[in-house]
Amino acid sequence: MGQTEQPAPRNKHVFVIDGSVDILSMIRELLQDERYNVTTTNFVPRTWEQIAGLQPDLLMVDLVAGYRVGWDLLERLQLETLTRNIPVIVFSTDAKLLRRAEQQADRFGGQRFIIKPFDVDELLAAVNELVGTAESGDPSNDEPANGTFLA
Amino acid sequence: MMATNPDPKAIDLHSLRTHLTLVKGYTQLAHRQAKRINDSPTKLIAYLETVLTHTEHMAILLAEPDTPQPLQLGEGSDGSD
Image 1 (cartoon, rainbow over the protein chains, first blue to last red):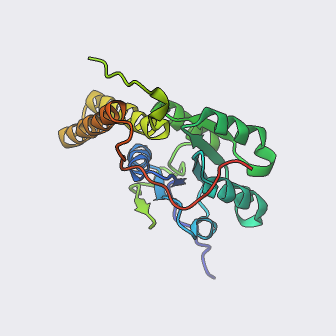
Image 2 (cartoon, rainbow over the protein chains, first blue to last red):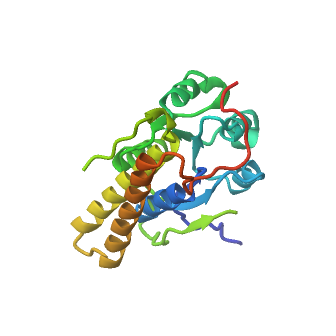
Image 3 (cartoon, chains in turn purple, orange):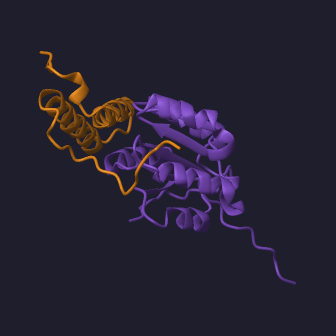
């Protein structure tokens, strides 16, 4: 009789989308240091497909004044069954934009809204509240965190 | 020394805030690293060098608002509806 195989424990996976590769590098550094697996990208045409395929535990999406790409991505994430239930942290350098996103959270989603510049502890606290600590809770899990940049 | 600009409206505030995010973030990463027992001097130095780089970018933005800064985003038109 075959033995049921449990999937290997894995660290929580955070997918970050931001227009600045420098911000992406910084967040990757921060989250990997806390043992989250991190995927980053700066708004490529197939970002939604990448998210749907990878099914991360958490998304972080940047909104920039004057650009629709962040709004379009948020709206599609909410509309599609495959991505609707992935929690989202929305961040922006523009407080007005962030407030507008929060006011329209039923359409664009978002569980936390964080202004840039942020405090790294504030960001980590939001991640922890939404998905918990990086590790699966299995004491045998010694998987090192990895980071991937999708171009 | 404080840089002053005759026309604050000409400053690219998005770029300025992005560099500020990087300065603050990497300063905090450096602080976390420095407090560790098993700290990495290589990482600490790299974080602090990044802080200096983005501080310089902010100084340039404040002194010469029209200078293009290396912060670009993909295609898009308007963030509002």
